[in-house]
Length: 329
Image 1: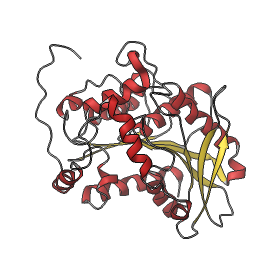
Image 2 (image 1 turned 135 degrees about the vertical axis):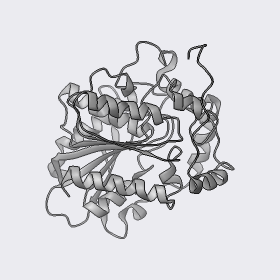
Image 3 (image 1 turned 120 degrees about the vertical axis):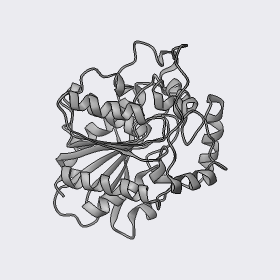
Image 4 (image 1 turned 120 degrees about the horizontal axis):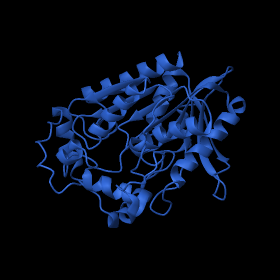
């Protein structure tokens, strides 16, 4: 960060419905996150019951299983949670889902229930990948795990009942950043051809120095300090320096040509606003396709935390419309 940076402008207001919910969430959700809090928060998360297969099956609407795919060279297998619409007789589009958690928390069941809403509406197969977490497993472990799982999914498309020409990658927060990195990696390695990339409030830029990151310091969810904690866990001393790979921080990419169509959304009142808007603009400058939504008054992850707010319903509806258009459902 430059020592001469002027004071940040006042933050944009939160949506009134979200602001009221945020006051309640703030009683249990830490405003920020420091490295020493990681083991404590993981321990608390471990106490919470996970989402069982019975809930994911939605009364028999989905067949649920876990499969092990070969991991990157010399690394453990990658666990894939697979949810297939029951009784499907023709190959279906698929969402390859990458969970959020700041690169330091979560598993392949986090966030998958929202993806199943899309799958139930549009008849999609969902494959949710488990990747190794930082700081124990820094870059490139997380993105390489995600890539290994994607390659396996595409190679086993017929077995899974998936149309290999209609696979999209999707994720929120850190998962959105990894989904963007995966699209870059698949392009550059000649890997599986993707039909699209859905990047929900994606975590894209390790430099953590945009106007929105300064505006929202100490406010909302996942502020600038938390962001520094997550990126430092992933990159160590390289964070913010000159040699960060675009497969770790996609905002570092200098060539965004040849990518699949993107859906990018973000709240106006969150740390990631400016880096996400800039990423959409960079895709357009490269001649690509991107649909961008900046939800007024939204904090990070607002639609998952306050699903009944009007702006949350609008955000979910926009994603579904894009999926229907891109996948031809």
